[in-house]
View 1 (tube, rainbow, N blue to C red):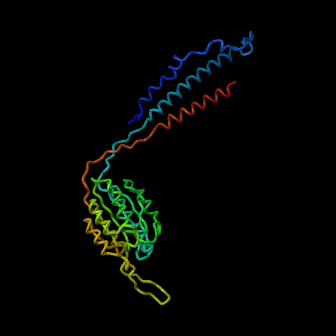
View 2: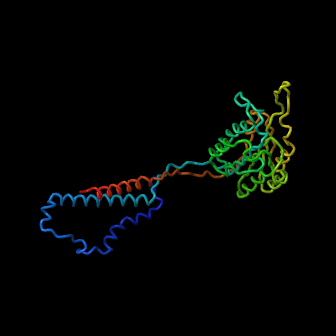
View 3: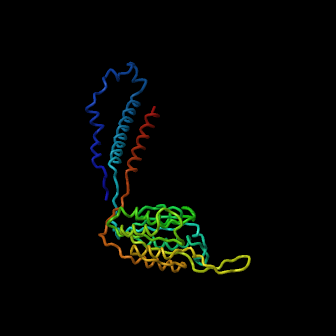
Length: 327
């Protein structure tokens, strides 16, 4: 359906005619040129008629250009068919650890050894794509916590900026408490929404201003449910000059604190030792019950004003060219 954003702009259509009628005309003496008795012989009858015809065409072209300009000012747009947008009423933030320990390669993805961040990106990307109807946001934290993506329905943007995250971007240490505090601050503005934070880390709180348990208490008061995910294998083989040896790469993981944070806020703690377990955790998180709300309708809009505006400019250029080059 064709609609106009500013239909009242069409009232400007008779403006040139009103100016012609209301403004005083130039006095005849001002327009009179030097009178030459043999001017007709110099110019010729045919040339005079051609000039009159050219002037009339210029007037018609100018009128059409003005009409197109007024139409463009009315801001025409095409409304598409209504599209239903499912709205769950849930605001969900993902807090991803970018500390230095996330570069440990104790995960396997498609048969290759990858670091913890790459595995997190691969599985979280699929999870984000499935969260249709949720408003998603992204927090990246290391030594400090940053809001990388504010709450949005644009899942593509969240995925893109998560994929662009690199280890050490926010510092080498881990500020779990600051990440939770930032989530509380951002979700506090949505009192009626079902607020969820999914926090993924492979270590313990070693930086920041806010203690994790204090931040968890504040989150519980604000109705923020936190699901914590501990990342890292229990065992990996390290090759060295003296041979292979088995080590536990997750010795720094503070599972006790992560469990307490989840329990205080009504969430749950999960342990992701490999890619399969991480995918299973996201499948479980997919089962969160949304807050039921009415369907919202969205009608895609396509702006059409550039077309009449461009045509008006083209006609104006044509008038200028004719006046410049006519004999």
